[in-house]
Image (cartoon, rainbow, N blue to C red; front, side):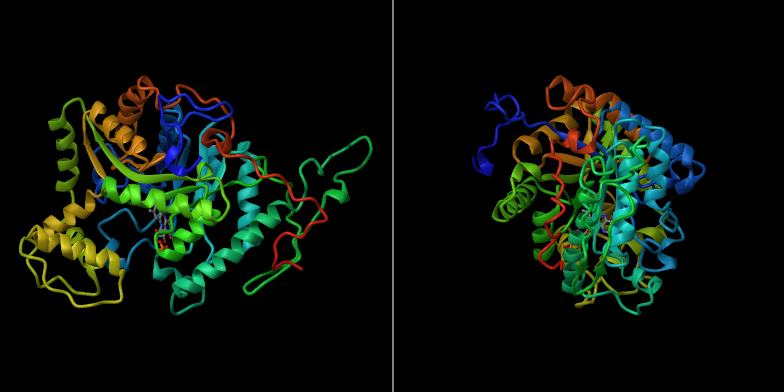
Length: 463
Ligand SMILES: Cc1cc2nc3c(=O)[nH]c(=O)nc-3n(C[C@H](O)[C@H](O)[C@H](O)COP(=O)(O)O)c2cc1C
């Protein structure tokens, strides 16, 4: 069966095949995904570091049978420089695995996904921490593999400049192979903990990676038994050619920021085809575009919720949003309500720069208008039925297998989504009514990787 022929909801799947079901992750940015979300009157007084707030939100999402909650991360302050951050909540955030370990003790089913960079970490550390979280949470851990987007990270790890993009991905490739081999250090069932016989593990089940490659030399074994899921679920968000190929080889859930249905369909078809070309079952790779929902009982009320946040975008923040994303230009001499000036080629992200400048020219936007468009990217505004329609349309059109929901502020919009949109999706038969499985792999319909026999080397690069 080819990618285009998969069963859709409502169609009867062939025996042995699961019907296609929506899956959902929630992107938890502390006080919300909108740049001004932290200023909303109902946002937590403790800001990004309010543990009680994170617990409340996790429980709301679990009530809504979300597959996972997800923590993005950069190992630096989250911006271009300190000045760009002083009026946002982005200067501080919890270390993701630490927060998820805490949340695992107050939740039972929801998946717990943390971001960890392959550019500024060692594979042993990452393998160990995610294996630990998987054991602590009973098989609910996921790893969002990133190569680091924020150049400021370099300065925290003894480097003047960020590693080049191709080098970052080469390192990532080797990194993931080593982490997987480390997770397989002990074969399933080989840690017997036989108290009566005095045998903790069976040496026949032990296979240390003995890896020596371009970037890493790791003997192993990992000092923790195989994770309950075999391997925690691998998340990825590559968008460049190399990034997409990496995602297609290793990713099991692919995050993507898509603004049009046609663009999302093209991305979906592309990564699934790449996965198939690598010999993978395209159904074992789920595509999750980002969606920022503004939900209320009337369209006007939903629009007012977005407007309320847009009005909280401070002038300095609006200027910096545009400045930081169109290039290394100082916009301070330009009036906020005047046109976006011409900008030459810069060293910043070209695709984002082109996108924003084209939009500003096409629609004759002022600096402020462009900033607000950027702040509301991926928004879907409307009644619960309208938001469910959007989700269903993208799902059926194979633009998405599910969504990474970025709530603009928290906890209100998460509650609205769970209490109003989720029931509508359930009524349509698109989303589960209760958890049927206990692990994140189970929720997502992903198989459990079998453990490598002890005598087989981990990777081709392994000696
Ligand atoms: C929903 C989503 C979440 C992301 N989260 C992070 C993150 O937490 N940390 C990070 O460094 N990059 C993050 N990224 C960026 C991606 O890892 C990746 O670098 C980006 O999509 C560009 O792809 P490329 O590196 O292939 O050009 C995220 C991207 C998306 C779409």
